[in-house]
Image 1 (cartoon, rainbow, N blue to C red):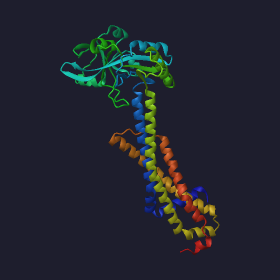
Image 2: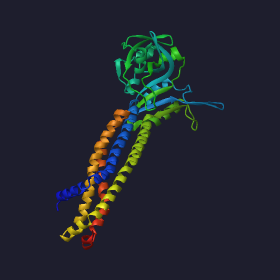
Image 3: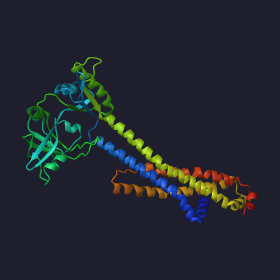
Image 4: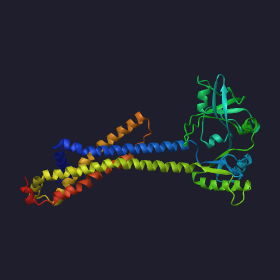
Amino acid sequence: MDFVSIVRVALRALTRNKMRSVLTMLGIIIGVGAVIAMVGVGQGASEQVQSRIASMGSNLLYVQAGSHQAGVVRVGWGATKTLSYGDEQAILAQVPTVAAAAAGTNYSAQVIYGDNNWGTHINGTEPSYFPIRAWTFDQGTTFSQQDVTDANNVAVLGATVVTNLFPDGTDPVGKEIRIKNLPFKVVGTLIPKGQSGMGQDQDDNVYIPFTTLLKKMSGNYWLQNIAVTAVSNAATDSAVQQITDLLRSRHRIRPGQPDDFDVRNLAAYADVANASATIMTILLASIASVSLLVGGIGIMNIMLVSVTERTREIGIRMAVGATESDVQRQFIIEALVLASIGGIIGILFGLVTSWLISSIAHWPVDVSVVSIVVAAVFSAGIGIFFGFYPAKKAARLDPIEALRFE
């Protein structure tokens, strides 16, 4: 018999017991659907984490003021007063793996416009900060380097601050706000970025020249951080080492003494987050695959029952010339057809389930073509694997004994 005829016979045999065939396929349907949906959830979560980390900027490094020890008391990160604007200029001039840098210092204050006020973070920085963070403007533009030099009172607002200070939709650009009783002219607003990879609201910030913050607000003279972007992702590790060596030399730190600064590579955070998301995806897929295994056992069980019920039919086929390989092929194809139909329905079930998860639970779901193909191939493989033993058993029946079977 040719392949088409074998498939036709297999379909006829399966339709004799429609309910039994449907119940047998149910395990494959649920298994394939669960695998597609769970892998989609895992990949969606991974992409969301990656997008949040990417929103912080590409090839981004943060040089932060470090800790120090006063007697027996150790003060936490950000407590040292040794990180300076000169360090930033030295990094730009002497570290070849660095493409750009921006000084940074932070302050918390109440921001006021008219009758509205909002407690937020005031970030002193430079115009280069926004390209480093790959952050585009919604309205207006950034302040200039001349504003930094002159310590002018100009500000760029994040989207959260705009929403709370200008709830009626007024254009903030050109308006005057007050920060710590000082008037500031709004020169630009930023597009929303949402939460960072660490769960912080990136839009709840006001950006002003760092010189303005140091001279007119905090009264400090040191920096709390320097944002740095490397020339490429591959160069981030080299940049970390070169910046570390340079700052240890500038701060006169002797061999064996701890750094009074900290260089953080956000690309490393992205790798860790990606690894965690991959593990979660594999775990979800593994749990869902148990349903496929159960479905395969169901196929084996039904095919064994089918061999018993059709023993006399097998004997007749052998008596008229069918070989063992013909009989074995017939039952393997029946198991394959059963698993394949279940796999196709399972793919549709998985796509619908993914859509429902995304629509109702509002979870990020990304169903890839690869996961669909893998699930389909795996379901067919389940049919062949679990159909092999019943097919082998059918092929080894004694024709004479099979003809006598009632």
